[in-house]
Length: 179
Image (tube, rainbow, N blue to C red; front, side):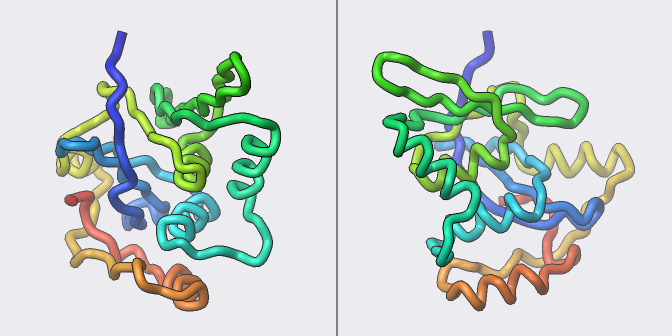
């Protein structure tokens, strides 16, 4: 049986080789990471929550939080459990009364919801790699990642500035997944 390791969202970026968003999860108290390629909507939702930007109307992940809480549930954790054919699998652990429900979900959605609750995120230890290992593996497979300066911080942006920033992202704005 594998060990689950607690992680946090370390970075969100754009992979220049695939033009796809990547969320970088980093183990708590360690150096290992897990990059997961995600869709634009999920990347924006994660980034908005990381920067404490609230929309006038609830986004899908806000709705999921409201449903869990409104139905008397507590999201106790998110587990990213495995990868199969390049697809990662996750579970939401929701306690309601004396019952615990494990709900199959995409990691990107699970992360976005966990950030809103908040709830801890865990990854199966076998999925973690030291920084640079995933870039080296990508290079060996022919998917070179460009070496570029770090991405601009979004910590102090207003909602309009964040929207403008997201719309102007280019693949060359992101480098290898070094933290």
